[in-house]
Length: 290
Ligand code: FVH
Image (tube, helix red, strand yellow):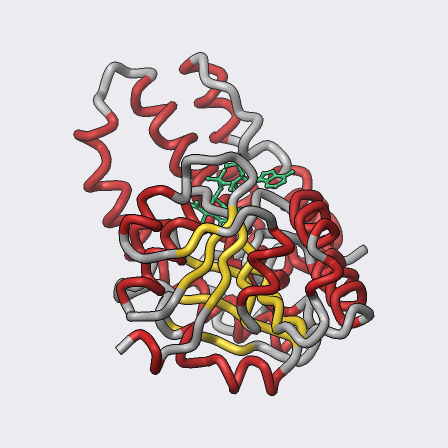
């Protein structure tokens, strides 16, 4: 069966690179792997992968080369070491990075005769190949179309544009939402634990509350796209700004730092002072433009 599947090279066998290579093996693809430090290839080799001695040899082995390393610097180091083998390859960088890094890498890779796709993995390693995992791709569309069946092994494949920076932009935007929510969750647990209540006891309440508030995203999007922050206002900004003073106050009283949420307060205040108190909190986005 494996002869029928596209052979793939995977550079980088950290938690995510190993999960990607493992999913490809499970799907019957011939896989060549390389990792900087020895040892991480062994479990994959046991399952049928070929371990290349060098990054250059791994790149030379197959047309499709998937890169999943720590960050942009390591990608540059590894592809730089294998630069002579890049001509004619399709390089797919699934390393977390910025749009600018993706565009610069696209230029560098293209100058060596290879096609480039950048990607953003929206999953943790155990989710790879499972329902719920998805990956953003952007860049060279013909390469995406040609290898989509391979990418679908990892999860749902979402192509978001010819601009190679767009996958990273979508990735970092979603992660911004995640980290913002994490900040709120940590603050909530810190407050509740300051009164001796276990996080586990409080967790169902917090989960239910965040789920109930999830509809905010769609309503905010409608206000932001129209630029009308006064439409469908349920809880006006002036009221929210007045109540927000209670958050640093309760943090202080409970002996909890407010530094995770503190940046929001001056923005709410400024927006009210600018005359937008009757609108929704969504209008704060106007203050984020630089
Ligand atoms: N794991 C996760 O939950 C997230 C999910 C979303 C996507 N991220 C991004 O995926 C990239 C890889 O993450 P990872 O989880 O595989 O990370 P590590 O397990 O720490 O493995 C890092 C690999 O990078 C190699 N490496 C680091 N520096 C260099 C270098 N200068 N030259 C060559 N290779 C390098 C490292 O090699 P070694 O330490 O084993 O020798 C690992 O293979 C990442 O962008 C996440 O943000 C994961």
